Image (cartoon, rainbow, N blue to C red):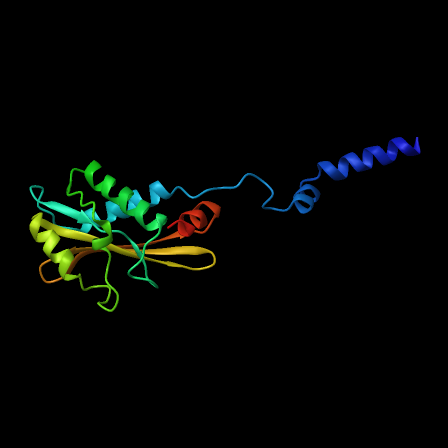
Length: 178
């Protein structure tokens, strides 16, 4: 009978929620991934709410770059740009596809609000009314993203939004990819 009592107590201890979560830890469950697509779509929607756009003219979306290395991007920056451009199209905005994405990165030493001469020329060639530019900053727990929709004539910011992306294994792999 003593053996049966021990088994009952052991079973009760294992079934108690506090013991199980303590043993396995609160993070022992399935990994929760951030919906990057949803975050980027919401950011594009915020830009559109504030931007006075002419539906007959196009917008160019530049590659998002690291705030620490303005001349470089990552797989994360390129993917975010593609998702933001896609959302603008879904919302009825004409987006000019410019495959020379490397030329559409902010140039070092020119500051975050100043567009490069090449970007201004590309936007004029394609009669773009605005250019979406963006940077991201990586911390231990988050990636902070800043987007601006800029009129290429005069560099006037017509809309801006900021958002944070929780750091997880998926985001780390996108940042590591060149």
